[in-house]
Length: 246
Ligand SMILES: Nc1ncnc2c1ncn2[C@@H]1O[C@H](COP(=O)(O)OP(=O)(O)OP(=O)(O)O)[C@@H](O)[C@H]1O
Ligand SMILES: [Mg+2]
Image 1 (cartoon, rainbow, N blue to C red):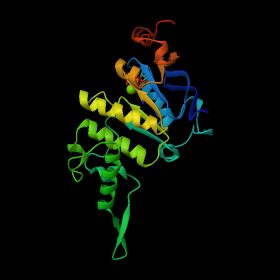
Image 2 (image 1 turned 30 degrees about the horizontal axis):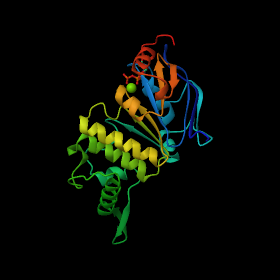
Image 3 (image 1 turned 90 degrees about the vertical axis):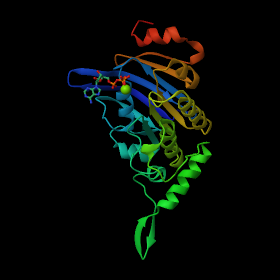
Image 4 (image 1 turned 60 degrees about the vertical axis):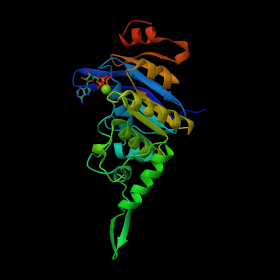
């Protein structure tokens, strides 16, 4: 099967700091690639180069065979890659429907003038969330009042609604309670079952082994290991994270 995403020799320098030196890996449809690594290893920098937030100093990103490097974050999102950050994913003051349609709002005509169709967006949000097994108690409430797990579900619902083919999640469960962490992990399984590729950044070893079809370990900006979970174990992953030689 051909790769959904190919990351080829990515590097990023911030002044004198070579945050990412040489990172290459593939993501296939329905595959979850976990990016693991210690604080400052370069994980977030790698995903920001994929999502178009940073332009790489060197290297290329290919998505469905097309070169993605050099495109804006907006163009990358339109191409079918949704990136979900723990805090930045949602507009706090808006309800789930408006968050689902953020930047692509539905309108209706009233007396010939376009106005936001809040009711339709809210109905769609409730539908998409129900499809994920999530019932939001009050769909008219702003997402600020929702739990971390519900917020993650809305961000994931947005990825599904817009047919993202690749979803990138930077520590989606780091600030969540245990039941909400499970909810997000279950949503990852459902995305995989739909053939969506996932890049998951996680520090949590049980999550890494539960969700990962492939584990890519970053240490000081380079790849310290790339293996299937069944071919490795906790100790080896931790050793690689610490930058010990293979
Ligand atoms: N915008 C920036 N400007 C300058 N240096 C940066 C910038 N972003 C990241 N860095 C540096 O690049 C290195 C890698 O940072 P990055 O955020 O990618 O690490 P990370 O693996 O995501 O760590 P964490 O697990 O703590 O989130 C660090 O040394 C960091 O200080
Ligand atoms: Mg990070």
